[in-house]
Every structure is written in structure tokens, then in C-alpha cells.
Image 1 (cartoon, rainbow, N blue to C red):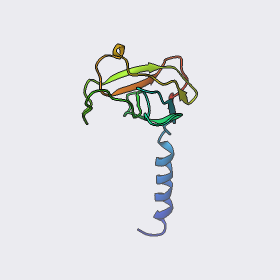
Image 2: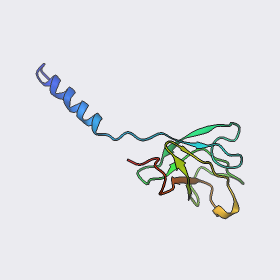
Image 3: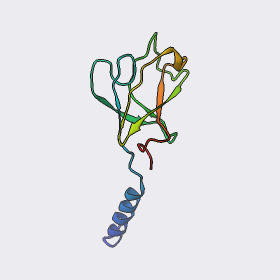
Length: 112
């Protein structure tokens, strides 16, 4: 590689980096027996799950949790800007060890 190609490589790297969309940071309220770490209060940063439009945070898992995603469920919750209300694990959510959440359609969070 000679010194003339270095600026071209730098420009290509900058364009590639700038073209990647930034993932918004979404926080969800920690709830007893529900979303977020169980031994803390406040909010938890959620992680996007692929390109599926759903998010995940650590949560309370009743029974004997496994490392597999068995019976996954999606919970629709209300959000505003970058903060979402939490959820509690209830029988109405159905059987599921891992719950993912999606901001409600009228929420402005998590949109690109």
C-alpha cells in the first residue's frame, strides 16, 4: 500500500461507519417480579433483539429457567421518548420464560 491509497481507505472507513444507523437507547422501569434486575430500583437499559423491532432486559423468571428461549412472548408497553413503563410477569402473559417488549404503536421511542 502506498501513501496515496491511505486517504482513500480512511475515507471509505468513514463512509461505512457513518452509514450505520445508531441504535436508540431505551430504558424500562424495573418492576418487582417483572422487568429489570430484581435487586435494584430505577431503570434498566434494554437491548434490541436483532432487527425484529423488539427489545429485551433481564427479568424475573419464575420456576426453573433454562438457557434456552422457550415460549418467547412479546409484551406491548407504553413509552415516551426513551423511557418505557415496566411490566410484571402475570398468568395473563401466558407461559413464557423470556419476555421481549415492543413500544406501543403510539409511542415515539425506538423508531428510526
